[in-house]
Image (cartoon, rainbow, N blue to C red; front, side):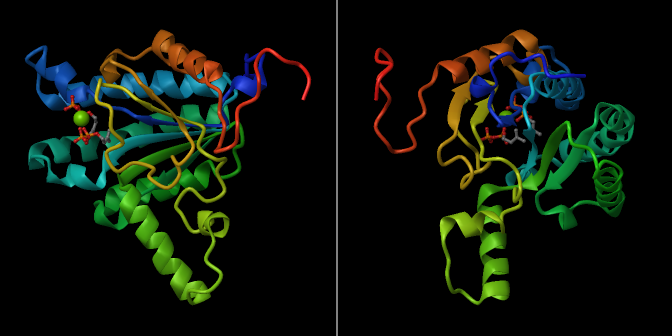
Length: 244
Ligand code: IPE
Ligand code: IPE
Ligand code: MG
């Protein structure tokens, strides 16, 4: 499907989302937290479709952090099962829509079955180019910076280190610069997500819990982004003057 955006200038090339609030959504209904994650997956589906239709080039979703291993074993177990079935169930539609899937994070910490699913999904969608959907699993911004530094030292021996060249060693190598970072669930923190990559991203915090997120909330985030003036350390353009 063709992107239905009209103003490509104000559409972010790369959006990242901290999908927070599943547990509270479930607890408010006296349901197990795992039920919140299950319903949260439906919101994830809506978000993927929404951003792909708006012409976003890359969407990075925080699904499981390095620190989430510290949750009760039953919750971790339920999440791992959900990831396995979600990859299996979503793959045909992602292929149909031309979406490329990529996973970032310390994947060797996951069960072999899940690792195999990740590899398989990446292989089967490798040639797709409508949008890249990056799922952060076992991801931490500090982990990313450290693994990049380690590989840099191994491959380059510590010389010529500069920020632009370092980008190629991060797990997000090859993706567009991060433009917009959204967090749902009401907390205003990054929780060890894309620390390096968020250097000049616009931040958008939504009060709504992830399972309740739909098109209206996502459109709000895009509208907020379109109204922001990005400066990247330079001075701002005068909005009232057409001349230089
Ligand atoms: C985010 O929702 C999903 C994961 C961290 C896996 P939470 O599970 O953190 O939900 P809250 O923040 O407890 O409501
Ligand atoms: C961040 O949410 C991780 C994901 C959404 C996957 P958390 O719920 O783990 O973050 P904190 O603990 O509130 O900072
Ligand atoms: Mg949370």
